[in-house]
Amino acid sequence: MNPLGQRESAAIPELDANLIWKKEPRYDTFWLATAGAGVAIMPFFTVPRNVAGSGFAAVKTEAETNMSTNGQLGKPNQFLLYGFTVEYLPDVAAALAASTLASDWPLVYHPAVFRFVLDANNVQLEVPLEKIPTGCGPTGFAAMGGVVTPLHMSSRTNGVPHSAHYYNFTVPGSKLPLLIRGDQTFRCEIVYPLGNLIITNATGARVRCYMHGVYGSGK
Image (cartoon, rainbow, N blue to C red):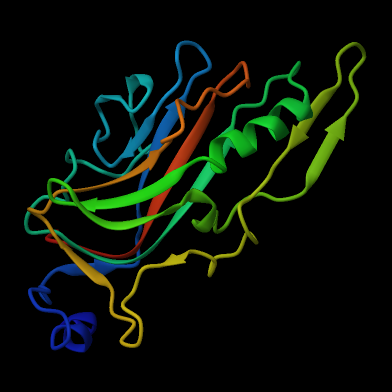
C-alpha cells in the first residue's frame, strides 16, 4: 500500500493511492526573443515536449518541459501542488555587457503579474511576479576581461536561492496541497498589463516556471 496515499487520502478527496508517487515538479519554459513587438502574455504548460511553440522555433525537449500533454497531466495521473518558482535565464554572448542583463531584469519582473489558472478561466492565484521566488539557482557575479571585448557574466535571483524558497500555495492552517486530476486543464502565465515585454538582450532569454509538488503516475 502506498504510504503517501494512506497519509493523504482521508484529507484529500479523489486522491488515488494506487498511483506511483514521487517528489517531482512539473516544469515548462518560454523563449523570449528580442525581435518583434515582444509579448503581452507568457503561457506555461500549454505546449508539451516534441512540439514547437512557447516561443521556440524547434520542438521542445526535456530541457524545456516535462509535460507530455497540452495543458493536462493525462488520466490516470495526478499532481499534488504545493507551490511555484520562476527562473529568468538570459542567454549570455561574448560581446554582451553585464549592464544589458541588469537592465532587462526589472523589465521582466516589475510590471508583471503571475497567474495560476484551472479549467477554462478559474484564476486560483494572481500576484505580482516579484512575489514568486526563483528557488534553487546560480548566484554571485563573475567577470573576465578578453583581449578585445570583455566577457561579462552575471546572475540574479528573485529572493535567496534555496531549495525551500518557493511560493507556498498550500491551504493556510491545514497545509494541504491542491490536487490536480489528470483530466483537468491548468496553466500558469506571466501577464504584462502595462504593455508588451521587450528585452534588450540581443541573444534572447529563457523563462522557466516550476509547479512544485508530488506527481502520481499510473506507470
